[in-house]
Length: 185
Length: 247
Image (cartoon, rainbow over all chains, first blue to last red; front, side, top):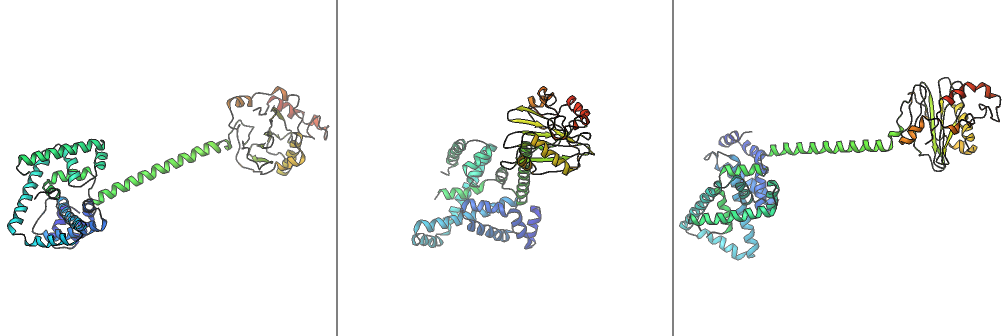
């Protein structure tokens, strides 16, 4: 089924939309979530939550590219889940839990500031990546968006791992300089 | 506060074009597309494996069985090559019956000798053999239509084998199997070039021994001295057209 037809189903509030989305993008989203969480169950839950989010987001939104729309939702959910899990592991419970509870009391202005900052970074990174060569784009996005292992990227590019690593190193340096130029560092 | 996780979240700013480009690069496309590709790959691997298996089978066949193929040598002479695979201490024999002729030869594990027989219509038991070396003897005999019945042939062969130097008990053990086929059989077995060349070459040493094989058919045979005149034409024919295997 075409993406537009699936989006139409969402807009018609037809539950078949979720089944069709799962059929077409289930594996894709699962891959993204698993890359972040490294846990099958967590990844599955992330994917299910993604369908729920998509159901809630449409019909207000009409995504132009359904794959990336769903992928971004999945990725954010997976990062949240990853963050929660690492907090639990790190603090042994109470400190992290108390901090998490106190986050609710942070003034809205701070939250807005943080959101604004994040938005600024998003736009800067978007511009940075669009200015890269196609190979550099593939390497950077594969590593830092899809969280693909370096060896896998090297294999697909048919270059050595060390060359891929040095390419990533140079890209990170260029990103840092770029963020400095944009007054974000 | 900017930390690594914050940056990881900020990567969401990467455009759709770059994300799709990398998705294709990583082959994370739609499920059905991936499934189709996977299926195609599986079928391809299965086909390659089947091909390899067939090739192995053919190679094994070529290495072990091809010499048992039946080949036509000429219009009147046929034989079947067999492997020296008789039971330990015994002999293995396969007898094939063609529409034009029937032939046999066999070998022995014990002595390393190779024997063949030719029995013609005129002289159904007229064996000849050659001594190609101390370890190898050849005797070839062809059965033609109208020749002796299998039972008679067997008896004749026993006789010939004894004449070739086997004891009666050994000759009896030769008959491990006896196969009759309707197909017209064949030419010489797979053999080294030198031996193949020798196939058609008359062995001068045999000239004096021709006809020594079977009592009752041999001019000098003890059991039937009178048979010499009767079989003279056949012996002459054999002398013109030797059938020995001096390998």
